[in-house]
Length: 321
Picture 1 (cartoon, rainbow, N blue to C red):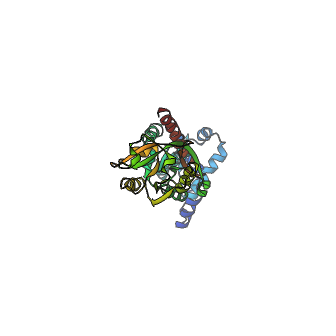
Picture 2: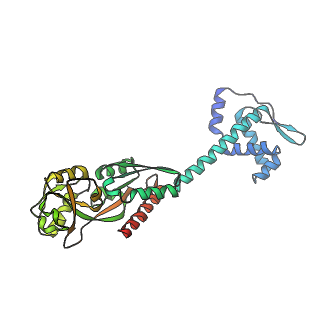
Picture 3: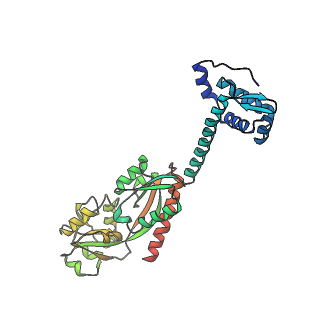
């Protein structure tokens, strides 16, 4: 069919790898399977002369013949047969790569890392993960426990895709997208020996002389929030100790160092010497818990799906409660 081609040395091979296009491989595979250039061109909906030119260009770049002419068509050379196996593999790998990327873009495949605080998410996160596994088994979710401030940093750094934390007016949240999941009622945590522990519910106003435990790492801007809600009841809270999480906060409470205002899910946290009582105030006090993610993140498709599931599960939890 063509003149015999001799390789031009390593430089030519290197250049051919750089210039070869997928179209050349698609044309070659069609020709190799049909063993007739006219039929192969028809199969790809192109005219025969340009098709033949593409095959010639490919052979020119490779430096050897892929086909030899026969009376009723063409036949593969030994090199052509070997090249066909790899060409099919390359095209299949490219096809799989495109499909994989499309699935990732649609949120059907990949990995998603979620930051959360177990003390605030144990009511719903397990059910959300169960529903996610049923709907999107191709995406593995890794849950990492971290406080709110660490979550915010991890979101900006790209170490997590979604954070579940207490929403606030902190400026850093303006750099992120957020969706309210649930507004959690507030309870009072007291030592069992506290005089008010025998009451089923406690008016916030009678706590004005009490020492408070701060929880700024668990609830961003907790001090400002506590100051605001207490001011509504006519007093300024006195924070005597700052806790780095629910465990240390309840330890301080059980030791009688102070009391703490915490969101409802913390009631289920094991603390033998601590009791929780409903908080009563002139205006209902709730703590907003939300999903937060980086705007225009790489995993935006999967993130949207996961946040939607979180919202649905939290709505169902609220209805049951």
